[in-house]
Length: 425
Figure 1: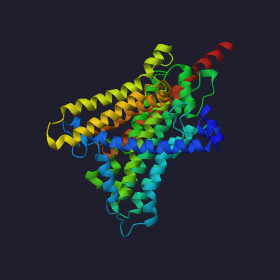
Figure 2: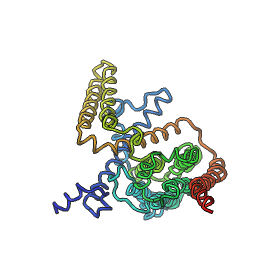
Figure 3: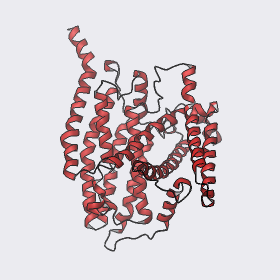
Figure 4: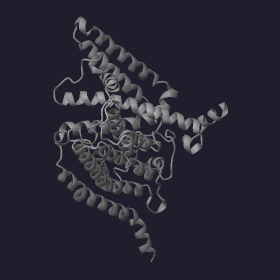
């Protein structure tokens, strides 16, 4: 058994590809825990960032700068009374939030955080991702129907119509990225998520810049569609409070409501991870083919540690600026302690063996974090669309754009082969 565990440590494959179920299980547990922590962090960050955009403070009461607010919210949701409507379909009502969470989490089986940092590498990874991510619409419909209430049902129907509409344009954009993996007439392309990142590395260009501006347009289509797919502002019509109370999850409370909350943020991270993989080089650092050599490698290797030291410095700076009042003593000590923890993590990341191992995960996570910030920015900036406007954008704007980009990408990619055929004749 010990040899079976150790054998994977020298492998250059993902656990699933190597057939090592132990490490595959370890990766699944790490991803589940990491996603849970990321959702907790996003809960706090969204409140604080939106507050600063609106010149407010945000959470400040629970912990230093409200750092413990997500934990307090989790305890509150666990202790709240779990209510089920008398006329609801009990089994479907129970299964709906579980179904949505499983759909959001299962996508991460094929998301590559590095060349070996993934549960498995499927040769149909893109198809698996598209298929599983679309199943969340079924869970939302189940929640709205099982509640046996008008507003949740309307929210569920809105959501299903919205997700189906934008998935078509999203699929067109994804196919365009897959076509770019082929090196014109020299390659055959790939549907593997790891293979797509490796294709960008081999071609020396992120697909967002390939066949400019076609790659950029395809990325834009996917970026808009993924916001609509996750029911986030300005496309949050399925749970529009001013019209539908809270939409498909109106009748849910306590822990079961928190599962929808967890699924929403997990889905946001999932689609952001897919966008990073398909268009932004995945785990690749900036300019991996241009800035090469030992000095550049060392320069980029230091970034993870510097990032955590910078965050620690921000904590210490905020500690100094905390009010000098006895009631703020615990918060001041807590914030300083949090800064010490971040600083220690930063120092650990300077260890050569550690910094080389976490490089892929760091750059992938930083790109995903940029997308998560954009989600918050959109919410604090754009007004909500009317439903007819939302459907118009999906069917009359994004779908024609997706078809056009797909056709043009195929034409540009095949053009050298067409030229060669003409000259040979």
